[in-house]
Length: 418
Image (cartoon, rainbow, N blue to C red; front, side, top):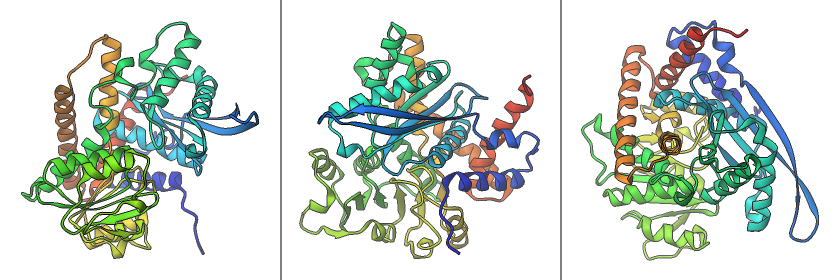
């Protein structure tokens, strides 16, 4: 019987297994398993043609046991409450793995942003911010960009929230423009973290980034920044893709040229260059390469295609791109997977740096931000590797064990209230 993929059920299933493998006391697990708050809002917006549309939005706050809630806002036509619950849970785990003082949250609006004008997107964002304003704030819940949102979106959130509070509130969001208190290096941070993760993984076998063949599925903010940073570090990028399909070049693609092409509003289906052939997103996942980087949406590597992959390593730039069933197949095939809750943590780590700069009313140079990011991720990776050896488990399971031990310990020492 066909089973519809549910990302929240998937993450809870992996957490449950991690509790057992890590010999973690399950007394507090019911608290960690369930979100603290789920909010659904309905957002009426007057469109450019004078009609009124009502959009459905969500904000799920999973855990603030280790600090304020933290998590992005995504705009996508297929966004669901279960997806947002899963993403909020992953954020709690991600912040614990990175050892930064945040808990997990996530927001989303069910909308295809490409069908809206900039004016309509502004109105929708402001309406959403107004709806969730009572539950967000620099000390409570700090949103950030995610799929189909960016620094402009965060500027609208910041301004709306500040207007409601009668004063500038830069700490309420991260990933905002530098001119409004954003951090240098934030835009490329998640992609940079993917590159750092790949470097750390390869170093375990004495390998270097230079000359490594990489295929990247997804050319959004994360995928495009990862591609550019890989390219400038001598990596041979053999395949890239976006929503329209993918491109392949055995001798390597110029990530700068491809990114500039996309930034002009083009799609990869229209990219033409000598030596470049067009492939589907499915074919990209099965491209022969050293490192496969899924940087699109969840549920991309499944039991249906896990046997067909022709990569040596997987580094998860997207949230939840690999199902639990696929994980088992990849483990049997000896293909290491650097899990999303570590590999794409660069964004939330530098968001933390941005938040600290806002609170202290100062700014740091890009080099300092990048160095601190690599230092923090290197320490986290060492911790994950240690647990992987201790528990004889995959990197994903080790990362979950690291996170759950920290979350459960925090619950135990604080106790239940009242």
